[in-house]
Image 1 (tube, chains in turn blue, brown):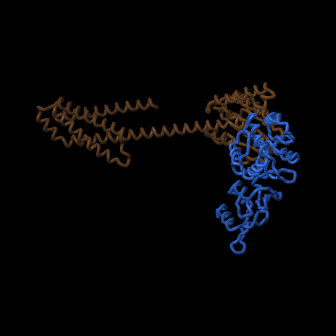
Image 2 (image 1 turned 180 degrees about the vertical axis):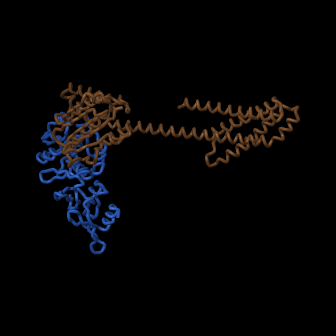
Length: 244
Length: 346
């Protein structure tokens, strides 16, 4: 039996997928979710093989929801109109259904997934890693225990590299996220976040002082007292952003 | 505009004719006072001035095809010198042909050559300069008009594109809902097609600058809200209040719906669970005041920066229509986001 979950904030859109799935008796709809929060919970609980996922949803969008999953299941995206998302799908050879879609198109997508299950999950992971909002990122969605926390970017003190993860430091402590430093360097506003070191991305709003260390080295002092080492190129970059 | 042009053109011709007529009379009197008979004085004056008028006309016409720029004004001087000479030769030939049997007149003709030539040159130069200025002003006016037209066109285009930001998202999602309904509840699907068609028709038929009554706009809005309610079900609640004066007031067509659309998007995607969108319209001393309120989450809101994305185009539209930037304001009160729009009434 194949387990699937439908995640869409419009009940009629879900009922459409449900109707199309009816003849496929090998597929069992284990849950239906109204938003990404419910989605994360249901996915953790049921460990589905496949999800049908809308992108524009309350609170956190489809991509942000996927970011929160340790082992994301295979995804067939269902979306109405989102040029940016479509470009991203095509770049990663991920199947997507443009609403409204026909039964034939739906069956084709399902068929395609069935015949190449493994490849699809790999593509999804690649998509999640590279996808970034078209405009600068305004917030970062993280998971703290069972809770989902939405961190506005201005609340981020700095981001630190941590093996395969990054630590996102805020007033409330740090959050772990399985992303790369360069991902955040590219998606956060370059005027506020500066890569001052291979392992540090600094929010310049939090900076109070730059202190010299021995030789040519410098260290940044944050408002909360944290000291962050600056690499030579990082120091130059920081100076140019600050205009000194 | 075109009418005015031709009028000013014929007026120029009239002034031009009068000008030469005056000189003709003057010259005739002058020559008569020099003891020439009225016949000779008159004929000389007519020939001289008519030839000059012709020369001036040629200069003016040639400017239509080539006009020296401000920098090479010297060309005008050279041309007028040459033209004056040619005209002088023509005048002399004509006059000597007229009175071949009057040696005293022929002598006078050759004695006054220098004077006649100088007069020609002065006149032609004067006419040329005037003509040049006339063309210059004409061109400036054309240029000004073109600029105005271009601005007007750009404004219309901008208004159209601002207005036509009818969200494709809305359209495709509505079609998806209809598709879902078609299988299980065809009657409802048919009703939604009807609503969607009425809404789209209302969007298409209105012209940008058209002012409509609030009553009409609310009717159009209701179509939109009905469709959204089918899409979002119980989650979307609306509350519309308006006073009796307000409904008769006018506002730019299709202004309210995008604001409400923005509020819905804001509300629906920023919170989970039910949302209430309130629309409150009232008349306040000759101004229509619209308040649109939606719930939102101040912490996680993705559109924290001032007015939301959808509102900047409304603001721009209000500016283009009323030349005022203060007609749209937003206000945050805990978890309520309020958009206020003021429409001055003429």
